[in-house]
Length: 404
Image 1 (tube, one colour):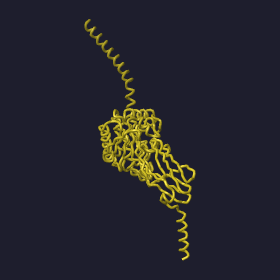
Image 2 (image 1 turned 180 degrees about the horizontal axis):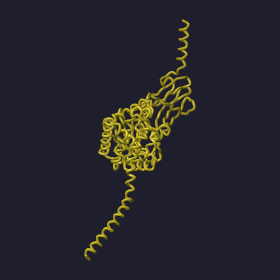
Image 3 (image 1 turned 180 degrees about the vertical axis):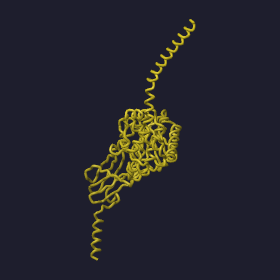
Image 4 (image 1 turned 30 degrees about the vertical axis):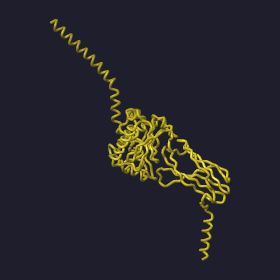
């Protein structure tokens, strides 16, 4: 009996220490709340509240629509001096955690006064939109394309190319979108960079895999490039959806290599960079390509060229089935060496060695062919001398025959 009484007392003490959520009439009340959107740099949340006693705590709670292993709620703590009436704000600086366009943010405030009365506001939804442009949209299956420059035919061509890319990806490695993918098509690379906090000068597109969003710069006059570039970014998205897990991640060469492979044959300039690197013995190792690529353009281009070549080597020599097995092991959390060894029988160093061996023969032949013009010139000169000598000998023989 005494034990039950003690437990009841402890329960009542705990209950009395928890702030109660009350109606606005009984405690804190909100006089106004606003949101200022400054895409892409920041979001400012404003709050004005009052209570019969000093407000001692006010904080913003927000959740972002993204791929998460568990539901995550973040908090923002505005600065203010405790008082019966407060006006405060909290700034979400995108330089710390940037968002792509179109992402929805659910937010609400909690306000507590000195008496322990707690008010929670009704959750609201904010769309982080790029309001600088008048967007149009089309949706087909798992894809939605937003654009603002060009006609319907322009957008439909991009949609058709994307659907063909999805079909190839599904047949090659068995991957297909698990969620709706939003694609924002900016009219130029400059417009695209204006929508990004951190961007490289050479970047033409970006796949925000955890947000199921692609941003890319394609003008109506450059649609041939745009088809391939869009398929490239779309492949990133689908592959990341298929291997999403809290246990591991893809090596960058595989991520970029699959995107390059699904895009199609590499450009002449990329292939030339790979050939030159082989001749000059300055290939980047496969292990180095597991990490993020360099921000220096030339080294980045070579990294992309090598990644395509490595993936092509694996698919051509070992097939799509093993590639799907490799992705599955990465999803389960295997290390790079463990996954490669289990699927192919060699680690990263073995992959590097075998892949580079396939580059030696064609590059050496190319180098020999490059030396041929000088050799041909010498042989041509010798042939000309021989031909002249033969002609002189024939002429002398005819002359002698005539004399006879």
